[in-house]
Image 1 (cartoon, helix red, strand yellow):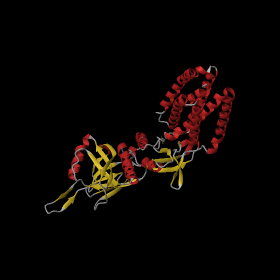
Image 2: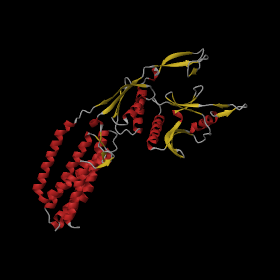
Image 3: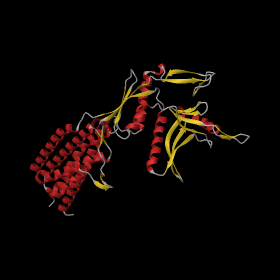
Image 4: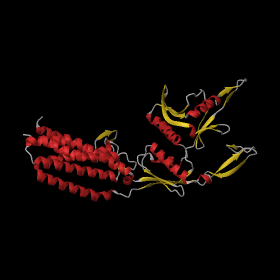
Length: 445
């Protein structure tokens, strides 16, 4: 291909990438223009967060007894009642406070909340949670003060037959029916409880007496004392799995609602109940301390430094410097697209990683230009490869640091590491393909 045509095509490609990255890629969607490029996912330090504080409940609950002194679910004739704390004094321990904090962390993790902060006051047991203010904030806040005590009870006597301790795993299941797709909450019980479940499924059924009258014996499935479902069993459950039909639908919106409900219950069951009952003390949005105007001065300074750097390249390396600038703009465009495409949470540290990547790429280009300036055009290709290889050896350790930080549980470190990883990886691939072709075609005779 003609070298001028190659340069022109690469330049057009870079211009297109720059437009998509800095402006967007819009298409008509009904009455509105929709940007196909995802928005940046900002961290709590940039976008603000939901602050939720829960405290150990000091409320009382009413216990009812029958005439024989047995606990019953409601007021009984000739029985009595008493008011007792929902949290016993002996349960208000540091160990239970820590367990509650850890359970809340696991719930947020299972909800796939990407960034969260959980702080415990070990003296009072109060727990403060910070999560991003998005569509999941309201759902996540419910998981902070919900006890999550799952029980299967005798519908008549209230006797607890099975609870969280008997469950091995709860998960969402799907089944195709003639009427649509059914969403199930599938609860698998542990080995020691399978026989108990089988006995329940054969005991709590609909039977017919000698006179032909049907008698239905039911169980009630409850979450924190609230009835989820009352039912009897038609079939014997021999595999230790209890399927609960959450609903059947044909449209995706309704199906997603059923699946979300089943998933949320499964998270509560799988993690087990909190050892204490909590009540909400605070649930409000906290605005970020960093405002848009705070970024204006640093952005201007960075832009001025870039302009000065571009002028140095043009003055010192002439035509090669111009192609280096064109290449650099393409790299920045792809670098800024990566967090949006790969759904990376950008924190202040993530922005620092972007700046570090931009600086490293400028140094890489300056090093290549300085190397190529000293040699004859015949040796350009081998000289470029040798110079680039020497830079790669320097970049690999930085790339490894980025990979390590990608596994960090602390969001600022994770954001910095993930952005740095993609910044270095894109730098390597982009310059060995785009920059190399630009440079070689610019000097080829």
